[in-house]
Image (cartoon, rainbow, N blue to C red; front, side, top):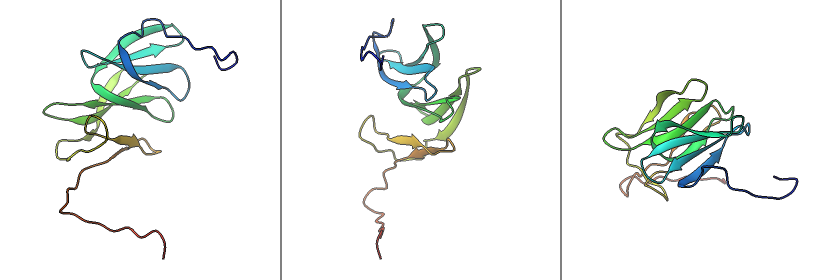
Length: 134
């Protein structure tokens, strides 16, 4: 509560981590420590619901319509789930991408249009130069 500066734990949130609050303030998404589940807390009904199987640090679209998360395994990808009907789509395949990042081997974000931006490992064979000043 920003007005009173009082913090409290959400009911039923034990065992969840990496929370991501939706931009519209209606939802909080989190991952389970075990089981690789994507959980969603709806402030309107004050309940948690399992909405997908996946893992990773989740990202919200700017309009709060989609939640992005990771699929690991033989077909790694960034997936997105439409919150209104829980439809899951692949936003970007990561199968042919050498991933890198500070945690879990992947760092990603979203462009303003919702497309994934992925940090990839190009190794030491590809060297690029970027000049910011003339």
